[in-house]
Length: 543
Image (cartoon, rainbow, N blue to C red; front, side, top):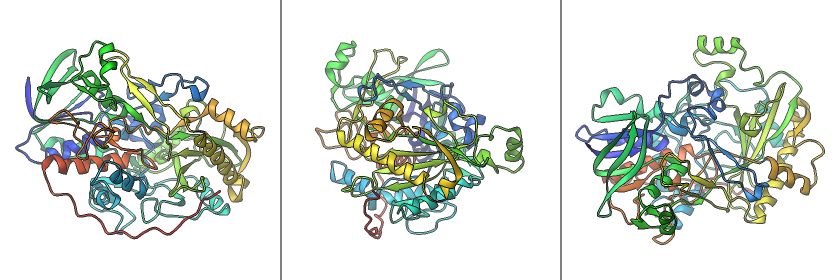
């Protein structure tokens, strides 16, 4: 048994931050465990290749149970399985969420997590190449940049959004989230800049007190007298135990963190007993409250060859390598977007529209033989919840995942309206002149009933699972406001599963923020001074 001060399970967006911050003290020994392997892979480094990682050894390759609201379909659920976790697999969009998300956290069982209180932690990590104001940071490890290359179609999307009444913005993370504009991305010189690139690789050689073990799959958290004392894991064909003198931190994501807790006897007692696991802490919220963002992908054939259809041509690889990150291969695919209010009573945007100069359908597995573009509305303020449960007491068995979408009929109504808005944008202004015809759902799918049937048959998601170990009040969640697991000393969960509710946007940036703030909590530091921010201008619904 090896001894450490801290054992962190999972080298994803949160785990890399924690490993960096906690190991900054040379007297502290930190072990970072990662089930996957190296991130030195072409399809990780080159931004446009992110979907090429799907269903490879870089992917946990999970699948949901048949979903009743989706005509019994089982949904493919990719998760990054390498250093950097899903920050090595995502579309690199830098999106924090809405200030209302964080104020809602603070008002509902997570004091200390209001927008004014978390903004300094977003800024501490960030180095924004373009935006220098009170909402952004410079000098942080996480590089945030404007795209090196984007299709000529992306500005047309922004102009077409303006044609239907959506204002333009050059910063989705500033005073207001509303509007249409180009995305900022976590890239550096046209290359993906994951959490591992930002927080882990620059320090590994200089910190002998930080040990990083890849190919290490956690089996359970060791508990003694309701205290976490270490982690049992498999690596290189053998079983090993690492002892944590101070804390164990689970940072394995919204599927694997609750799975690890339940394998350790922390979770719904009846469920654990059914699988032969003796409950240590009976908490029905472990694995419950799963949230994600449903996504519809609406595609059009493009009139001119200006998209990413030919990005695999060897000449673009030569351009990318010789030009140090230039050209089509630096595209994150989702180059532009909009945050809009579809429901008339929503207090902040309930949909994120993503625009890409490519045919993106069925997670990229379905192709189209020509240039196309995609406009994808994603429902970022869902209310329905799913859950994660154990399939067996064997850690190698994938968890049972149920998304549980559309329990409220208003959610489907909103999705139908968002499809209508996305089509209106694509068929208005300069974008309309760039397209030939609608491919998906097709020109014959127009009525509400037809669109609903298409959504249930073809809906995807935005890869943002969250909330399965949520912070909440004593009887409503798994964690207290300092991310400590209730009922167990010396154990925290720090990742997207910690969110009380999923944020209104992409989840990588807020997960990094959660880890930044947790590092201060673990080390007993005073919190950063809350920010002084302006109130956003009033905005009305788009439709």
